[in-house]
Length: 333
Image (cartoon, rainbow, N blue to C red; front, side, top):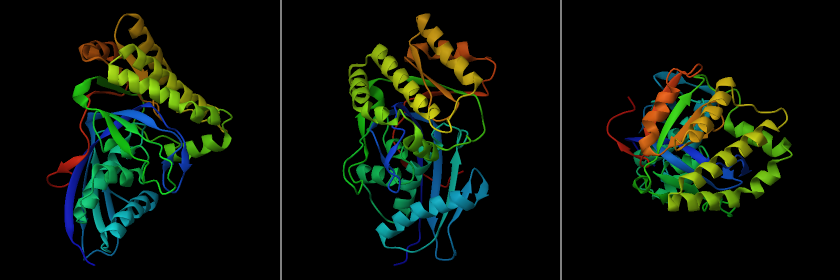
């Protein structure tokens, strides 16, 4: 069957409050544990996909530059999932633009594959449900399953071998509790070890990995309750606890994965100083050196003022909670 079609989509990055860090199936990107995240509004990926009869193979343009090698192979493999589902064979042109640094621990793979899932499936003539989009996006990046939804999102570990129940759901809409996020970027470069490779190394070598997975359900229950009750103190406690546990597992891998730099550490201490000063804010750090300061809306300006001009901060982004992936008009530019 032939198909020529074009579609575009935009998706926001998401930051995990309870992280999963580990897979039970590498091929299908099935997480070893569930997770809870927030999707943000101003760190986005915009992607367009066009299936054409005239092209010989897939092409990828990322942030205005042609991409080949492993990244193109990964995108082509993902497009094959869409092509197989739609019963088509045409190669595709993919153009994608991030509004923030790529591959630096700011969840660009999450927003990227969520946007690609919707754009590619629409261009192929599919009409997927949110659940189906989440399952599809997960096969590109585990965290992309969460960026399909907005606000507070819970990713289910699932138990099926085919992964059809390993998908995200909306825990609470953005309007339920409009928290703000101030992102302190401490390094603009891509990280040395990607999340996928880091997770595999931790699973294989960290002596703390089994306990990390075993403790996930308790953290999820505590976080879920804090979100639904809008209990900021409880959310701060479980989020920082879970973050430090994840990085403890990463650091105890062999060789150790140290995603932080000296500014990361200073900012973690600064978040705690701010809270001791009565400012409702807490930190979380994903697999990278960037620190996310999550606060009540009335504290956002105070947080940003405290961070402005601090040595080692390359950029500051201010975000609100956002919606899930959506269709976009035009191309990726």
